[in-house]
Amino acid sequence: MKSARRDIVAMAALLLSAGIWSCGTSPKGASTPTNTNDNIQTIHLTEQALEQGLRDTLRFGRMRQGEVIAKQLRIVNDQSCPAVILRHATSCGCTTVRYGRKPIAIGESTTIDFEFNSRGEMGWQMKLLEFYFAENGSPLKIYIEAEVE
Image 1 (cartoon, rainbow, N blue to C red):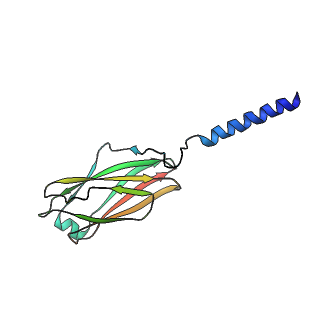
Image 2: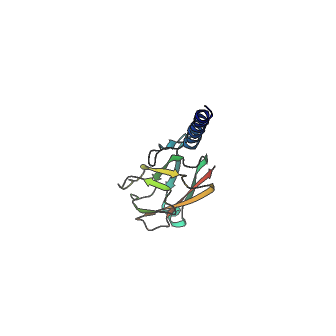
């Protein structure tokens, strides 16, 4: 009788600990980004701004470790010629970027989608993304800032 009770207690403890360890986790690649686009930030491209270098920060706020958050940034072309993003560079593999490869016509805009995956990150994070344009100005620098708990 004591042995059976001990086995039941051990099984209950095992199930409880398995439930605690699995809380808040999901299978690899199964996380769905949380979209926090209450208001989309906008950057206006001008010849002068590209020459001097444009910088902006996307603040992702506080997030749990392993959480994926998505944001968008609108780029408006206020130049006298179409704007073409040739390439981009990231400082970390935890950030992904998606944007259209078509030129941005004069007076038109495009949206860049950003995702920050906090898996393996902890504490205050500052990541850099650079966008290079065909117009040969300084790259557009976008900083991603987040506090990972």
